[in-house]
Length: 176
Image (cartoon, rainbow, N blue to C red; front, side, top):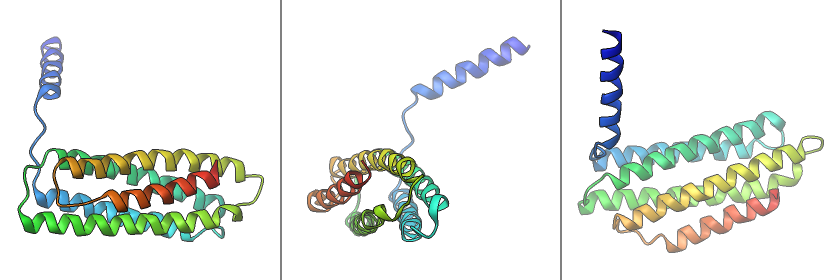
């Protein structure tokens, strides 16, 4: 009986891995974007706490970036699984995404200005971890915005994506 249960469970897992992803709704994508926006604010607050927050603040930034990366990946998957949008849903999503982009740019500007405030002996370790986190974040943001374009959302992300890349690249350069 145990062997049958284990085999049945394994078969279910294999079947689930081949199943088509569930279709997502505009409401779910809007919820994803709201979660991303909230996490961008958490990241911004953690950045603004530097240098007074020291190592704890640097860890908070790293943790916020990791969660933001996860939320961006979830949002990307949900956008891919969403069908065509009506005009109202597309406009709401486009406006939310523009706000997220501006908030990320502002957070990176603040982070770049705070980079030199981190003192030794932890400066190198913090800088290295932030470099890794920001590189990963940049890739997730790029995929998120590219997916929006691929899904034909009425969004012209060229300028905002270019500005995000410039802001993140400046922060990466400060920590490399």
